[in-house]
Length: 238
Image (cartoon, rainbow, N blue to C red; front, top):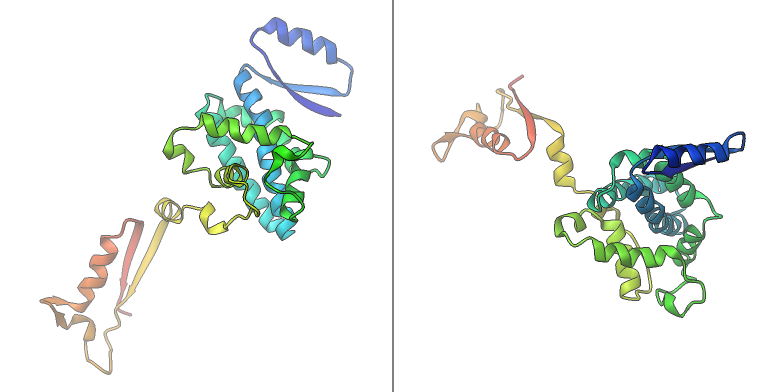
């Protein structure tokens, strides 16, 4: 059985399609977000290529799903930027088709990614007789996304675009560039523990000795309080 997403604007359209597929192996979920359905049908091809490259280079389930998670996040950003609905991501045309196209070796764009990852395909794709829709989609979305703040959140997409636009010889992803660690830390509640043992042997009561007119312990507490991160601060004197 196969599930498809129907993008429709009137109930009459929905009823016609529903009658056509009744008692068949086709099933539908539906939405009035026609733009979102169309956009996701294009984005899946871009990120299928990315997953193909990653699998060819690393052959690691952990790496594959780390990149898949990031790719899905970028698809959400791109979908919203062109006026699609986030809810459409969770229909068959979204998560289902995204994973199917990215992880199935029958996918043409994933296959292209595998070839690129193994070094069997150059970025000079215009000289190749096989022009896949994913490559044209990259250029289209690059032209659509003009907001610099949005563009900065798309490291996977930007890497693929650079590869084809500049005819680079290798498409490689640096994993540290895919995560904004500062934002990740800001979202977390961090527990800060400042050990201030009172029984110092070398310098008795060292933590309370004055330095620049303030106890030494003062500087550790001040730095913790001035941190940009959400922190709970504990001072332990044992």
